[in-house]
Image (cartoon, rainbow, N blue to C red; front, side, top):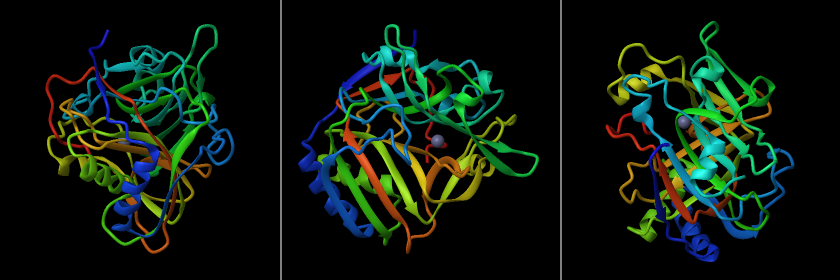
Length: 315
Ligand SMILES: [Zn+2]
């Protein structure tokens, strides 16, 4: 069993977070509207999740890490979301987030967009995840629904997960249009929280839709056979694309690392038109429109934290 560390996050009221995000996002977007709303029914389009909401016993899990991918891959690092649900003390948890697929299952490296309700007692897991992989033949990428080929809940190497009971409830709605600053949507939210809450870490997850514009997205190619030791080497290995809205995104963020070697923000996205991967930022600041639903997490779980670490490849 992997090592599990647990940390109680700071949990502000939703109303207080609304105020922090409203002023923080104003520095980076022309039109900003943040409010407390009832979570929309996430079983509906464009989400199509297996549960209605992102509320109830919310947790963030940071599993594994980039040091298992770089400088050279450690393919024995595989995890199962059903086990992770038990380790975060929430059997049957609904997971959203960003990770890597299990290479032993999918036959190679791939981006994973986990959308999974873990098994609970006699109820089997529901896996609505997507994977995106690079196609060396034509230099493109392929987005696939995971359950069309695979019937497990494995992933590999690393994942940043937001977990909840998947219930309806009150959430924070964020509308932000027309980017005027340099930060991406999630960095702006995270930095606003860090500025306000300082050394009291706040974690959030949920989903947002980039409704208009285009975005810079990467898809990992096959594992590198020569060691990748710097950000420059990693960026030369990764495959970058400009992808088109609407993109359904799955962000996980923690405002500040309380000392667990965390990845502070990680967002993967999928679409219904074949686009998907790891979100960096929009490339169309004049026309971009974001609509997101977020909830604060009560606990942070750090699972199988790498003993030997580095800061390469965490963008
Ligand atoms: Zn990623």
